[in-house]
Amino acid sequence: MHGFEPVIGLEVHAQLSTQTKLFCGCLTQFGARPNDQTCPVCLGLPGALPVLNREAVSCAVKFGLAVENDPEGTSVFARKNYFYPDLPKGYQVSQYERPVVGKGRLVIELPDGSTKEVRINRAHLEEDAGQSSHDGWPQSRRKSYVNLNRSGIPLLEIVTEPDLGSPEEAHAYLTELKAILQYLEICDGNMEEGSLRCDANVSVRPVGTKTLGTRTELKNLNSFNNVRRAIQHEIDRQVTLITNGEEVQQCTLLWDVDSQTTKVMRTKEDSHDYRYFPDPDLLPLTVDRDWVAGLAGEMPELPREKYLRLVECFGLSREDAARLTTDRELVAYFEKVVATGAPPKAAANWIMAELLRDMKHIEGGLEQCPIKPEQLGALIRFIEDKVISGKIAKDVFTEMFKTSKDPALIIEEKGLKQITDSGALEEVVLRILSDNPAQVEEYRGGKTKVFGYFVGQAMKVTKGKGNPALLNELFKKHLDS
Image (tube, rainbow, N blue to C red; front, side):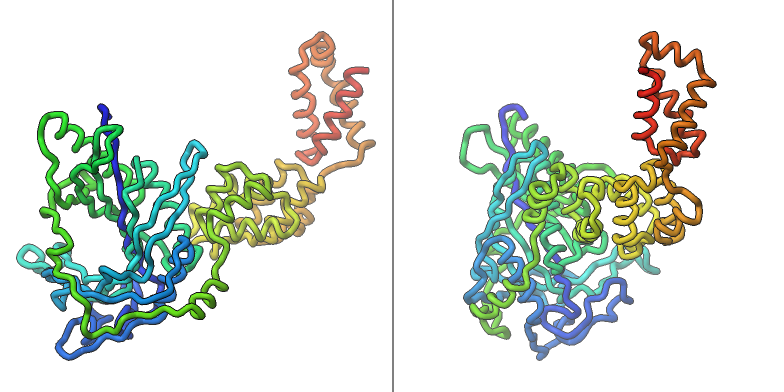
């Protein structure tokens, strides 16, 4: 990058998986009719008073424990003042000087296998704003519409230090963060529904210097791939400006997915522009030691811990372990398959090669999978016990996926058991050698590649049911004698 290095910090808004909003009893269900899930509190009507949602605080505390922060103590809610049509109160209730979660850390693994610690600056609770809609309505040419169903939905804003040095590191951080939120069951991570939103702060500086350059903030990043593309575009833009003798202006930029470029949204405000002050309607939030200890006892095994266990205890490759552990449902399915006695490597291979391929056509995730983990485990054990061959197992798997039948029943109904009777297979071997004298002479003349032809013929005769290892042994015995 012409002697420059990027400096990147991320701000992630995670919608917390609570049934009701942060300060009222309105539901948080996605897809409701516009303005159906509102009340005087989230509409900002005069005299309406907020009441804090305990479950949202519980979610924040669990996240704090996951990033090695001690969330005990007192935090304060503040009013963040700005005007926007979908902000009915004229301010947003957030946290400023004293957030519920302070400094922490999160370890990411990069494609080359190295690890990097990303410092968490803070994670604070805040309410969401509403949504402005500018098209798709009867008078969209003349006016905008406001839907306040999202107004008051609980968010946890997670802010990193400027520790990320490339778009790839930002992508790795988001992948790990999303997995943590899902493992904790405090956010579903659905970017399409707005449950997870990311803003990126980007600046560049000459390599070897410590002074931060002027940063810009990127918004409207609706997928991890768009985060990566937008950051790279902004790095290139800033380097071009500086090398041409121009200055980078501090501003907020919108990422345009269609043109793959950025557009200036507004000049960037600083914190004093929001005139933060403690919210007079909300008492300070005190999180006591006993409650934190209780929540700590409910913490699941986190993605990084599970990843290391799959590599070290199950012998999986880094790539397979990473693919499995980024999805909580997927790794839970894998562990149930292994619990049946199936070898871990074989289980991982079947899940990622066969199961995920066919699941692309099924809506609803693994909960709707027609093959239960116990059934896949049984199929893998039939291969290990040489009841069926790996080739026949793929046919059985296809039938299992169509019908949800147990593999034992399919094998029995279709007569697919592998032939392991050495006497019966020896008859097949001798007949094939007798019928193919030219190939026998080729083999004995040094053209050993023809060996695969004999085995293929035997599998054809036995309709794929011949034990491959036994057939190899018998052919070798007779050809080399």
